[in-house]
Length: 344
Image (cartoon, rainbow, N blue to C red):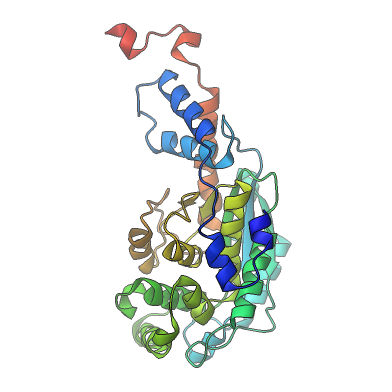
């Protein structure tokens, strides 16, 4: 982790992205050798087989473990809400944080159901980032501080990390971030978010288009886009994603906003998100386009668009199933069952 402790600028961060650890080859090979010996036809568990291998490689442990899944929800406020881009006022962010802390949100119920530890991290909710239609949302120092905060929130002894967010206005932030980073048209990336439709959605789309055009000459890479259009919670997600890579913690990215936050790292250095799975594809229309841009296939597709790590926590159930099948199934030899080669 010495590389991370040396980060004091975007330049340092870009350098660290070139020095990331890869998957654990030994653990991956052990998983590959065990899988075909289990009492089932090869490939018959489909995506579960891929997930168990992925867990082993990025945990650096075989068989993979799923006893300590954790969820991190970062919360931040956005000055762009002054432009009328959300169906809800900014004060709802703090109110929802209170709901999380009281155990009343959807993610609380899902965490209880699937045995996931939940941490909620409000980030200066009384100080929204700047309205990016007028100026960059954050200075480099402000953005870097939020990234470092996210890095520090990742704890040891975590088998998988679910990353989510809460922030009124942050689907507008995510749309601008993706538009600036991956191109296309504003309408490709801008969706209803909290429920804006009709003229309100057209207005939101114009706000994104105008803001990206206004800042386009200042955007050199994904980190620049994050500073200009992101919020503290998005920057923290990027930081947590990076720290997880160095701590050998596989990551489940939640929905559109979490994906956009992490994708800026992939845009800077290809392969940065190899230790991440996308938990689900959001009903927010820009999410499918984002997954195409970063080459990810979602684990689930349930027409969800809540955020707050809800889809990521739900996907923990499938990871636990994948890990338990890989570790617990009998081999053909142990069970006295003839495998395909013996039968032939």
